[in-house]
Length: 144
Image (cartoon, rainbow, N blue to C red; front, side):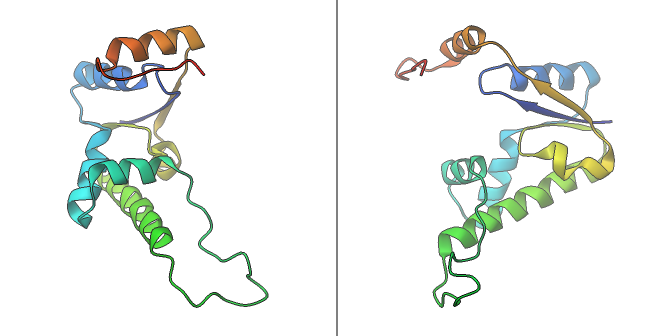
């Protein structure tokens, strides 16, 4: 059984994943994916987390069809490398058997496994309250 959990920030998707993992006694993966990508590729975990939360922009220059750029865009290369590694690691976890994967586009990456997909959402007030409960004391939160 493979369960993927997509969620809105602050909605409790991560907590749901952990609870399901405990209830079904199956592995749970979330930030572990970021840690593995960082470790295996020599990147900082915060950098990988930041890059993996952004959309991957097309790796083609805007001038395509007119002329090709001759310079290499290392930021784009790293972004693509992180996305490829994330895909590989998620596939690897699924191939090992039952697991719960939170976020990271796992629902799309693993569609050939026919996972049980869950989307967790909450109203604004509930998300703000959850974020306040789990925020560190020095964290400044805004409701904007």
